[in-house]
Amino acid sequence: MPTSNLKTQSKLPKVGTTIFSVMSQLATEHNAVNLSQGFPDFEPEQSLKNLISECIHKSYNQYAPMPGIMPLRERIAEKTARLYNANYHPDTEITITAGGTQAIFTAIAAVIKEGDEVIVFEPAYDCYIPTIQLFGGIARMVQMEPPNFKIDWGIVKKLITNKTKLIILNSPHNPSGSILSEKDIKELINITKNTDILILSDEVYEHLIFDGETHHSMAKYPELAERSFIVASFGKILHATGWKIGYCLAPTNLMTEFRKVHQFNVFSVNTPFQYAIAEYLKDENTYLQLGLFYQQKRDYFAKLLQSTKFKLLPVKGSYFQTVSFAYYSDETDLDFAKRLTIDYKVASVPVSAFYTNGEDYKLLRFCFAKQEKTLELAVNNLLKL
Ligand code: PMP
Image (cartoon, rainbow, N blue to C red; front, side, top):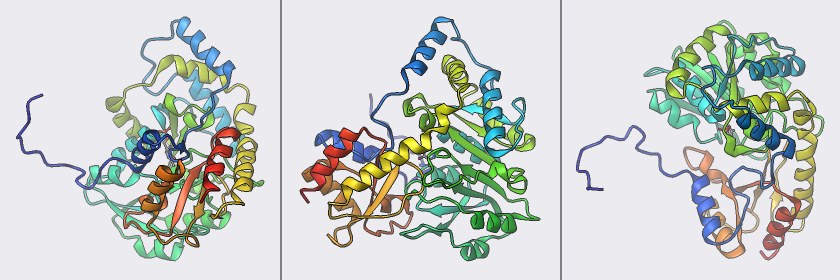
């Protein structure tokens, strides 16, 4: 490849390689147990894998319709009605996407213009802010603090201006494992009442919720649903993050705009997988059991971690456990996470990476979507600290 001397101006000058890739790469180089990136180290159900190969052999191999195949959209409509008592029309209000990330990107692209302001709660999943900036939007950050990572609605109110176009929410929350409460929902309803503010609700961990808590989907509240894009991911539901299939729910007027972008972005998503997932989801236990399944993993991991130097923060949902090492070391969380990977063979993600200002509360995020033996191996290594 010849070297290029053309002048190019980066649209995202501050963006480098994500911390997830950096830590996973370091984990591989040092043969460390990888609890950094959020993915299961176990397989999707065999019956689902069989369905996928059946669908390929049945020749469901050409373009799917732009919004997704109808049986899958119907299944999602049934699921949403059953769980949240909300009726989303498969024709006009549900679109299948290439994962949650594409749904988030497309929703932001569809509504954010130069100068629009977007409220983002930090720590934040890494794709929100760069996507806002790509379309000329301005992210207004609201900082959430450990140990409970609650939203300070007083700060949100002060940040709202006539330029506020969108509020991005994520519950259950990555990286903290916190969830929105009923009080949060009331505040959100009050703040958005009589405004045109939209909501992008990242609900990819909707089923991973513990201790009998309820997931407050925007779909449940008509005042919020009317202004919300709701994002879901089959990667999390099916233990198959590599399949990159998800979906978006939104009222017709918002979904119309969403699809205008979607059709030129991916046009349509992987056909045989959509048919297989539509068939698989006929059994609602496939997703209803996920909360208990991951709660057991959370509890098992927490029990093992009790004997280490870490202090555990509360986790109400998601598949992440955050821990504090503040009592043990005053290194930066990035240095500590790297040292843990290299010297103790356990990879994590430093939580400062989720704050634009790099706020360092001396926290690490571990992913516990792992087999028990993986969690045991990791904690055995951590016990050497
Ligand atoms: N949102 C959050 C909060 C996530 O943690 C993830 C996955 N790590 C996504 C969105 C993206 O989901 P997908 O893999 O389906 O693109």
